Amino acid sequence: MMDLFGNASYVIWMLAAGCAMGTTFDFYSTVTGATKYLRWLRPALDILFWVVSGLAVYYLTFITILGDFRLYTFLLLGVGYLVYRALFRRIVIGSAFAVVRFVKGLILFCGRVLYRLIGIPVIACVRVLYTLLHILYVIGCRIEDGVSAVIRVIFRIVFFPLRRYFHPEQPWRKKLRTVEQGFWEQLSNWLRKKPGSVS
Image (cartoon, one colour):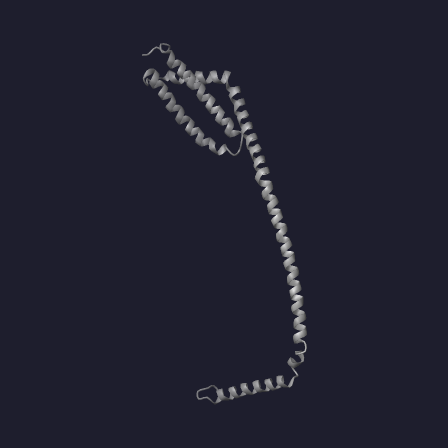
């Protein structure tokens, strides 16, 4: 059996791996937990973290002790993680929050720049277009009112003198009613005289 301290590189690599795993886990956990827009990534990142960590640890054991994986590998990883917790955790979490604040500030700055470069001109153009359309609509309504008034005047001038000819008491209207009444009476009599018609 290999002596635990006989291969210094193996011990150093396992301690470093435990420290790196703690650093990575706390960093992405802090970043994803600091904003609600990234929390949905947490389950996928957890799976990716453990898969990559397992492959990395296996690779390190392979290049140092030819893949002779032993129980003390977990012990060394745990010691490396405890070293990280004792010495570097506050720095890593503080750095993660600093990164989050920097990214948020950068996004906010870019948003303000885009708003000033694009948003304000677009809003101004929309307002100008709305004002022009409103003016055109008002002008169109005025034109429509004017045309309607002119048409009413023309209608009154042209058809007002003819109005008396369409009065119900006009002789031609009475004659037309008489002819119409006679037509319907003749049609009714003809239908009664038809063979097979219902009397």
